[in-house]
Length: 278
Image 1 (cartoon, rainbow, N blue to C red):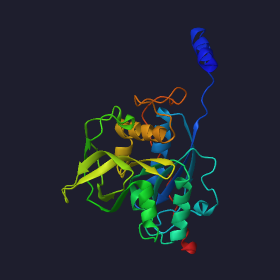
Image 2 (image 1 turned 180 degrees about the horizontal axis):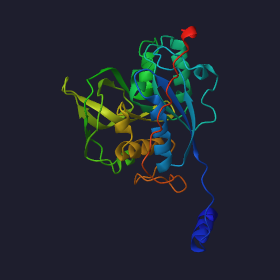
Image 3 (image 1 turned 120 degrees about the vertical axis):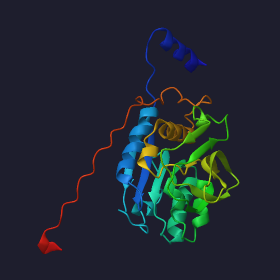
Image 4 (image 1 turned 90 degrees about the vertical axis):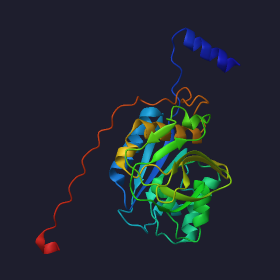
């Protein structure tokens, strides 16, 4: 009660309340088939414009499919972070104990945001289903690249506040969803052109003690770098850590710096090796 009275007094006399501690996010990114150099910029800048998030970015593995991020082998590898953002593509990792070390930290309660090719990561390991249970859906393949016709399902969930009832993405790569796990709630679907199935493309999930937000949307930079996608992922991130209001807006102190266009930095060219080093 005393805290409420103090807050009212601060507001009446124009005194600012202390700023909230930023949400500490760790982004794991890298692997094959995607422009992760630019995507880490889009995600970190775009989400921080919309939510009070600070970032540690771990970009590793080059374009390898079988790279094992060394940090995952550390005990309590997620300690010190409020949420882990998975935007990685390591589909050929086979060590089940390595994958279990990832999922174990989340099962204990570390929230997760799952983006696009993370769905297809670790799918050849003996612990593939533990990873899929964390994500909330199982996918093993995708359709050809084309825009996705996204249809919103849940009109009440705060993660979907402000999201269009129908959204045609600028480009896309629809992931075929073979299974929705019991604790997963789909929030939007897209119908496959090739399969004609309804595939969840946005969802929320519960894995052990952790809240999980996931979307298969985001193969192309032009889809990620839109207000629809960035607003969605910012709300999803806030939801996983309990900082999203029922109205879909950040709780006080967790607003971002303000949305503005993200200008992608050109990648530095790789110098040609000297002839005597080839």
